[in-house]
Amino acid sequence: MVARSRSPFALHGRIALVTGAGRGLGYEMAKALARAGATVIINGRDAGRLEAAAGTLRAETGGEIGISAFDVTDYAAARAALGVIVAERGRLDVLVNNVGARDRRPLDAFSAEEAENLIATDLIAPMLLAREAGVIMKRQGYGRLIFMTSIVGHVANRNDPVYTAAKGGVTGLMRALAVDHARDGITSNAIAPGMFATETNAHLVADDDFSRFVDVRVPIGRWGKPEEIGAAAVFLASDEASFVNGHVLTVDGGQTVRM
Image (cartoon, rainbow, N blue to C red):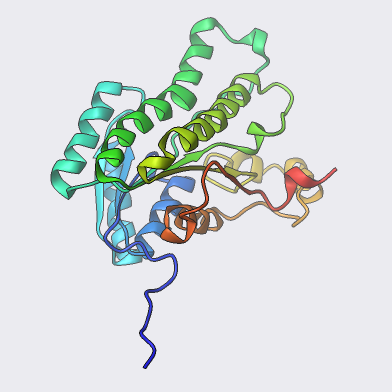
């Protein structure tokens, strides 16, 4: 008799934290991780929104969903929140650093404070959250750090310099941690989404001219569906990705490879 092996990409017994998971791509990644068997803690600043999202996720997945309400730019609160997760759950196996903000303006339209605030959200916050998670994961001898970068970490748009700089920094940070943590059983990878029809992009989806641009620019010829991001997170979180380290998984319908 051939022994039955576990399902590929199964995450049973894993504890995952997904930041910015009350809606959008973070929500979809949380859903996919829960469907794969992980216990998922969703983060955001609004506890009420998180409770509502957690209830929907439980109904959709049948999984164990917790909430952790904190602002990722509040470093003391972030450290305390990870401490609570470990105290209650015993470990933290997966961190999906998803929170991000965007402000499309030319560089000379930014004040120094505005630029610093965007960099604080998009680069410094995931850096320091990964630092805290890394301490926990080293102690365990196992972990998966997953960063949400962007295709603008590879290519640039006009009038989007601060966000582009931040996401390029996230990509560099991910690669540095891939080198630093590899011998500790921790992998570090990133997902670079292209144009997704999220709530945040609803105004662009509704813009006929912009959607025609998407149709021409993206080889698949359409916006990405938010649920199409989830499998990328599951793969990078899984044991099947144990030798994938320092990689950016681009999910953009082929946009960045088109001339």
